[in-house]
Image (tube, rainbow, N blue to C red; front, side):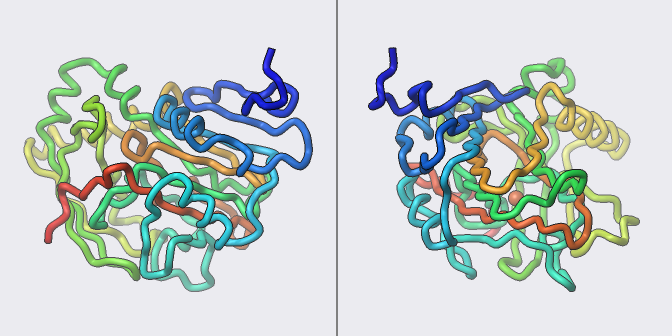
Length: 286
Ligand SMILES: [Fe+2]
């Protein structure tokens, strides 16, 4: 029987599998703080299950306390804005991440010197029922395991060249679509889903180029990849509740965002934690 000293005592927490992947831990007694849980245990869960939701806990009263918590996980990435990205809709966004539009699948750090292993999100304010804004995660090891070998062989021929300029960087990165996890070597997908050029509402299109197969094959690659990444068997759309903490394995997952109602009160904070040792971005043009 777990006692009070058990970090996941059933008296205090409810642990469930999240579908189709991930783990959720809910505090079933008030006054439990995220800080009370063993970071070693949580890190293990994220590496095993790729996504961890902590719900109904006492959380952080501001960006400084969130950042201090994330330092318990490892080396925190520092950006021009500091360590905590405030994900809120801007009045006149210069980039889609600050708009209320959808965000295509991508991996974090793709344009940075180092690729973070973990993303730690804190939902300061949920967008509200029916307002959308789910963060969408795709488990790429699952996608590849489910795919027929011929499809994986075709995807493996393709390399993406991504150019993106925004407030925080102006970078070019190159990556094969099928590559390997930097720690355990399992195959993973690194892909930035293209957005139709005609989508005029999408602010600040990145410039994407894919090489390695014919134009006809490339059309098939994009359409099959999109279907596979968003297949409910491997795709989880997280519907935010205020106070949620979500921690993810950025080495394995790709993520994007569903559009949300403009002016809905969606406010997330996000911090990147580097791996140990940190992973230098293999595709960044220097
Ligand atoms: Fe992202």
